[in-house]
Amino acid sequence: MNQKLRSEVPFSVEWAERRSLLKGLGKSDEELGRPQIAIIDSYSDINNGHIHLRELAAEVEKGVKEAGGTPYHLSTIGLCDGIALTGAKYILPSRDLICNEVEVQVEAYKLDAMVLLATCDKIVPAYLMAAARLDIPAILVTGGYMVAGEYDGRRISFVDVGKSVGKVGSGEITMEECMGIIDHACPGPGACPMMGTANTMCIVAEAMGMTLPGNSTTCARSGELKKIAYEAGKQIMKLVECNITARKIITEDSVENAVMACMAMGGSTNSLMHIPAVATEAELKDFDCIGSFDRAGEKIPLLMAVSPNGPYVMEDFDRAGGLDALFQQFETFVHEDALTVSLRTRGELVREAVVKDREIIRSLDDPVDANGALAVLRGNLARDGAVVKMSAVPQELMAFRGPARVYDSSAGAIAGLRNGEVRAGDIVVIRMQGAKGGPGVVTTFGFTSELAGSPLNGKVALVTDGRFSGATEGACIGYVSPEAAAPGPLLIVENGDIISYDIDRRTLTLEVDESVIEERLSRAALKLEYDRGWMGIYQKTVGSILKGGVLSAGN
Picture: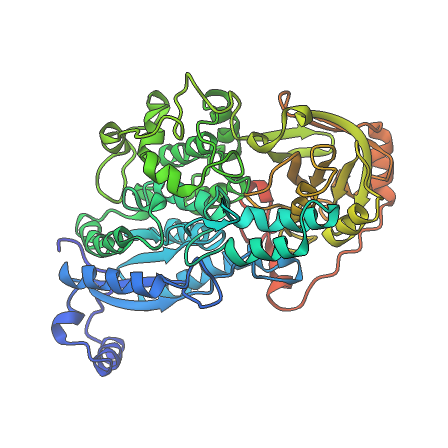
């Protein structure tokens, strides 16, 4: 080992006390002389995506020891969006709490490197953010996807659960059928097998070069995943030896590769919140991360139809060749010199890839949709931008104009949907759901799921400063910035105001004179109550969501 290790402490009282306590844990002098490696996971038995992480962490430990390191197991929290209640307001703020948990533990103990294991929506980006912030050798091991469920002779996933509620309400299916879907949609460990936020972020981690090749498309139940975990334990020692820290992997080029992958795979809209957060933590200060999504959208069409963009699931993507086979389809745009934790470049990996099923991974000449997956809309209602997953928008809703139906909660919008208050042609506005107002950018997935299973599916659009699941389908425009609580123009929209948008033209407009908007804002009464505890701290320190919504004492 040529360079000095962070964990090396000169002879002193501090050195003696640390050494004495570690020896009390059973560590030998030889072990204490090796690189000290953190194995960090977010295991819990109330999260499908993470319930198997201890098994994977054990494999990482084997690899670290065999390669000459001394491993230590550390833990963070790791919430599941689908199980969390109370509007899931804690979900996004948990991301920054997790990032800080990693910083506090690894910096306090001055460990030399880390292998991080996670699967779900906010934990994977949190670990990427922590790696970028700490800038030490780091590898992610993502926990794989859940196998698809089966019910009534057809393949189903978590997407079908929310739809079934709306279908019961409309009489399309019985309550018994709904319960059958609930019972069979989630058959085991791993991320829900559609292109939701969890799988999107696992693929983003690989696209950035922070996981070993093939990790993001490996099934949670696969023996191959244990091999990847074991190899990650060995590989982290090579990164330590070569002094390859996270910011040598997370660069403008690798971030742009991840953005292009998002476009091609039809990734979650939440990537527009998480990728900028990683870029911010990597201190890519002059990099226009949100602009990179629009730039990528101009050249990268949708090349896969994994649910909710089409009929396929993650195991189909894996079978078809995985991420590098997808990259190969737009190889001329890929930053091939971007380094990965395998110590091979993206270009080397892409050139070795093979597409095994052209129905799953399409070429630029034969895309699923000529448009990109995500679009950033701007206008007087979203001066800083808003996000739509256009790959999940039906053609008839790509441009739309209608009267606003305004709610300050998803529960209110769901009630309006059920009692007939929401009508065909409406644009539903759900506001006060943003980072400060929610707080925590609250999901509107309950409303969008029930809408998708109702007779109004395809006849109503949504505009919100909140978010929705990466699995949401339909005309759903989210992350409107500035959010209502900023205060932004969304705060003063009234029932009956005409809203229009055009996704191809990237516009979102409140058809009200600017003078009226300013007059309404001047007299608007913003009732923003700060929560106690962590959520209040989050509200007071969270920044712009389109810069990642990271925390700063200056916000």
